Length: 431
Image 1 (tube, rainbow, N blue to C red):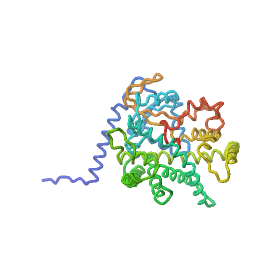
Image 2: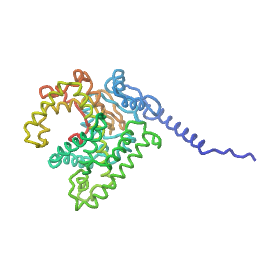
Image 3: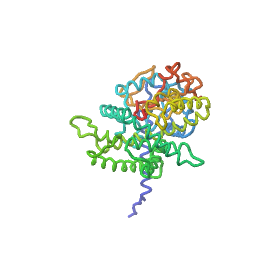
Image 4: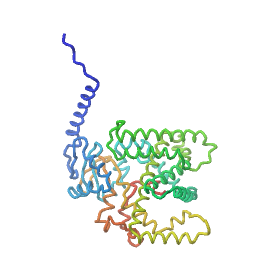
């Protein structure tokens, strides 16, 4: 009797992978993503399965990601369809459409990020949360960020940390690396009451790998950037869990005033025991992500833009020196001093506009939605792109030029109505 052929494990794996790819390919060809739908915006769905995801990721890893949007906008118009992270997506660079999407969150649209991003942030991230729980915790974090107690010591913490960092500088430093260290240490201090040290530095190194995962192809294999990000996320979560468990155990005798204390004391309903450890960990992790990469990049770019614009730097120094002269001796800056810096606020707004750290947000249509003659099918993701609006010469004169004076009260009203940075009002933006 003839001997039956034996398949090695690797051969079976290849066959299984090939069959899985074939099934996914057929789903893509004959599924909803490829069916002609009446009223869809023009555009291209790109390659099978991958769509235009690789082009988007590649563009945003360069210093000039605009061509991804610019070429499609010139070809298809301000609203177009594409295919990102495994799903057909409506991409909007129209400020009216973007405003409509954001204003109808919870009615016509819901927060919806690709699973690859959700896996890194956690299902209870403030960015992904919906409904009453999101409203309650969003209100809590905003209350904490706006509290007088926080403002009383925030300026002191910033000054102390900056001076500590400057004292350690040698002849040559990498500004963005130093800005990242300052931002991370300050965020850890406000969230967990940890002073700078080896623990926070080790945590920051894991965050570097975690954040790299947001700008990578979501292949969860150990040797890929995304796989390494998932591993780093697990390490960060475990470190945060140890702190949460200890602080919960010692809560009655603790005198901490930080974000973790506010979360531990929060009661979601009168019948609730409060937030679980997993919910708190996801919230803390996402707040650290939000404050770390974005704020440090903005700080670095602000220095760059001011260095390249001497008149703006001179006016900024003049404003700061005028406030310093009102202080007696070593009297420190207070929150009210910061809020009185009118030109400083213009510099911040213009840096945010050009930097566009938050390029846009993902939402999902809860029903068929018609706007400006286009149909957005139920279940389709939409991406209101803020970056494209902020750099559109139709709305901003010489949009790629750093011009903080455009935000002065006499002329800023038009810009302000078009300006979107965080997508959702963020507690991080307050800090």
